[in-house]
Length: 130
Image 1 (cartoon, rainbow, N blue to C red):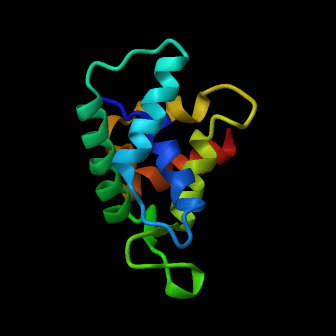
Image 2: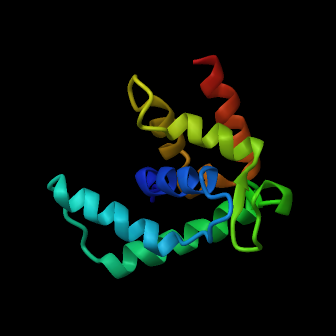
């Protein structure tokens, strides 16, 4: 199993830009699904996609990719900031950067372990050397 990196990328961008706003992973998944549909991609189940976004939120928080946003940075108790690890992940999977999908491929090789903090830190260190 591999992750849906486009969905994770969307969530991380929303975290990055979410000062003062409530983090809503299901709504972000629905927006992304609409964009995908307009681009000709079809999802098997929107409800499953939205549930996956909520699961990713919990996983990103637990693994230290995101953290509660401090009040002085626009935190409201319902939003997050990217940690250093989260910034690394976003830079590895960000589709707006030119180049191939090599970092995503490196992450995919580790399956669900790719977002385990120690595994990810090792992958990120190797990606910097590539």
